[in-house]
Each structure stands twice: as C-alpha cells, then as structure tokens.
Amino acid sequence: MDEQLELAMLFDFYGDMLSNKQREYFRLHHMEDLSLSEIAESEGVSRQAVWDNIRRAEESLRKNEEKIGLLGRYLQQQKAAQELERDTQELLTLTTGRARVLAENIRRRVEELQHGI
Image (cartoon, rainbow, N blue to C red):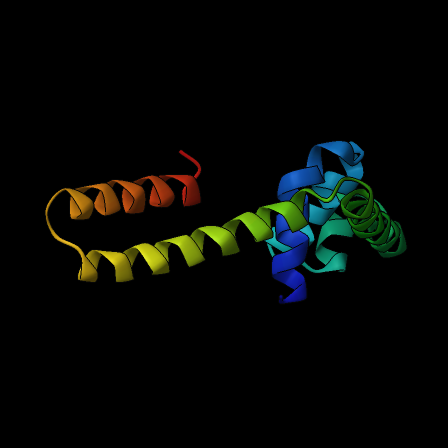
C-alpha cells in the first residue's frame, strides 16, 4: 500500500488519539498538501516544530496500529468481501430460479458491508 494512503487511513482510524497540534499539522501537511514552511508561517511556529509534531503524529499512528490493529482488520475484511463478491458474481452466472435470487441477495449484502452499511 502507498505510504500516503496508509497514513491517511491510519489517521482516519486513530487521528482522534493525537494531540490537537499533531492532528492539525498532520492534516494540513498530508491532507491539504501544505509545506512545512506554509504551516509554520500560518501557525506562528518554527518549521522544526511543525516537522517534529508531524513525525510524532506518524509514529503515534503506526504504534496505535501495532497495538490495536484496526487498519489491518479492515483491510482483511475488505479483501474477504471482494472475494465473496467475486464468487457470488460467478455463482449468479451459474444459477437460475430461487438460487439466483438468493445469490443476488448475498451479492447485495456483501456490497453493503463493503460500503459500511
């Protein structure tokens, strides 16, 4: 997985566990694509202070994932759902009647799970 995507996903899962400064500097740098200098200027702090907070935030996000593992479980669930969807699509091509209706219901429920419904 791309590091930026991984950090964004870790932030989604664990961002509330960061300090306010870490959360804001991380968001500005990684989500708003502001440079360290731009953040430092707008916040009235040094570039080094911004860098330190972002690095601590990244470290904290990764440590939380090591301990809690939400992202890993989420990715495993998504992979399993994709496999179920693939198998169900194949099943739909092989069945008719009531079996096809049941396969379509399964496909729909798997899709709902994938989208967090």
